[in-house]
Image (cartoon, rainbow, N blue to C red; front, top):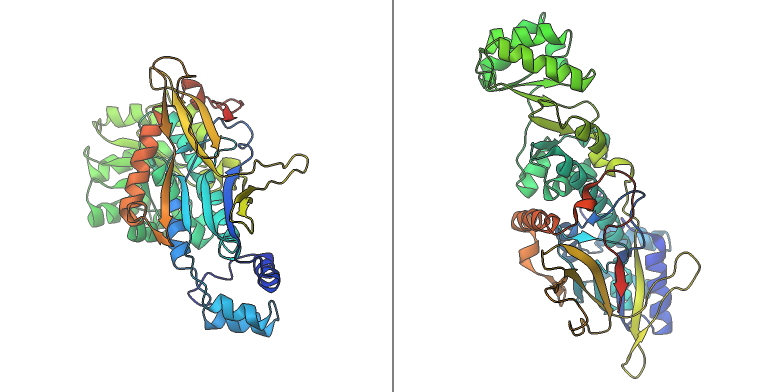
Length: 439
């Protein structure tokens, strides 16, 4: 496998370009849009994630010799198209919602303007990145909201593939998680990393006490000891005996958590370890975290649920051609009209209407150059613009890239959550918390 990701795509992207180059339509200036027709069942908002990763991927999207040779050998496209692919560089413009922004059905999350051939080539890349990262971030944001300020760590690397694990850690961090177990995510994106020992480390030793002593000798008494390999009460007793009352934390990975956590807190306090924290893991999701809101839990570790979008591993986004220039240079709106999958043609802008308390009340999508005059809104209402330019002439805005872009997205997500109505954070089934209206 080479370093290029150009073939991590669908064949029809290339065959469309092949045919369009042949008939002369490949160079028509076009406008593509990524959006979600609906939110996953029961969700009241989504969180945009993956934008920073996507911009970097677009800048590096290249067909190298190995990819071109494979395409030639398998006769995927004509030789003339291979020559075009060899020189492929995205030179268009991209606008979209900032990473970390809340979104709703119909939100124009990403708009790409370029020649048809340049823009259609990016469909799979755009959707694979935004669908997965936004799904993880949307699920993670729900977990953050019910954790009530208690730290959360992402630890789902073993429940997804090696590349998705890094993307998931970043998306969860943007959504408000505090750390990850994934070291590559720490190296690449600057996310704090965490982790001490698994049950295997305890089972390696002849006794649980020996395992605890080895860990404390290596990392000091502030470490976190896993106390549920055998008997939890006995494990807690040994942990405090070995590390002393200054033991940093104990981790619980099994059992009826509300009952177990209460008993462990009482036991730690009775042993004088009143500052020792309790972290829980054990297949948590937003519902089990909410169920522990009244328990003396200090932090959570979440694996499978966060990296799988808590049951929705893709956000349901699509990428559609919404406008193209005609031979006279005029923009022509185009749209799919089939039942259940209709789209709205034309260039779009978007803004969120906030009331006098700065609570979001409406998502407004302006078809054309909008937004239009604000006189139609109630006194005290304001419109917050949602779309920013992300790429200009194929060059990404550096503010959205790398570690700094990740931190900016995390901060933006925290601000946006304060705008949403309180109903947004209910876990029960419901529709989008604010409507999306076209003007």
